[in-house]
Length: 160
Image (cartoon, rainbow, N blue to C red; front, side):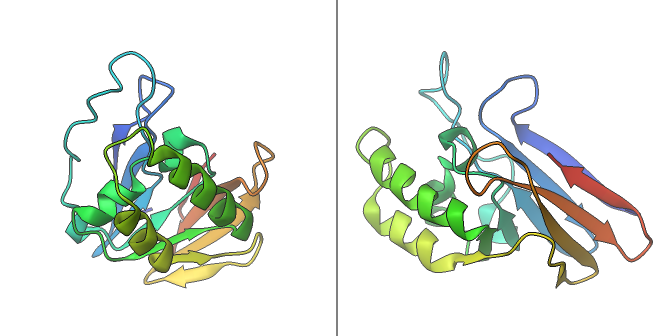
């Protein structure tokens, strides 16, 4: 992908808190927005970017370390679309409702996030500006997906 920048804001150097920002052209794609779990996870800190500037959020699967900060992202101004498989969306709702009881998040932010949430099917490429996104079955949990981001230049990046 020409002139793209990938920044790891979580999930790098650790196994929890997946949060990756792909900037390509004038679009910002967030891949996962997870809660850091385990030692040190009590304090999540600020996002390393302005949530208001993110165009899209793609969710790979519904484990809390990949979805746990989505309501917070919305409360801090994210208003773009959230994408996942239909199964991930349904599981995420249940997981995030359960998380409300132990995290500093509220149901209003969860419901706002669910209104932004749309679904994509495996093997059906969708265009997002100059980037085409295609989902592949990850086989991790029900509805999990690998995301392939492909630019018009022919270069691509696969999140597994």
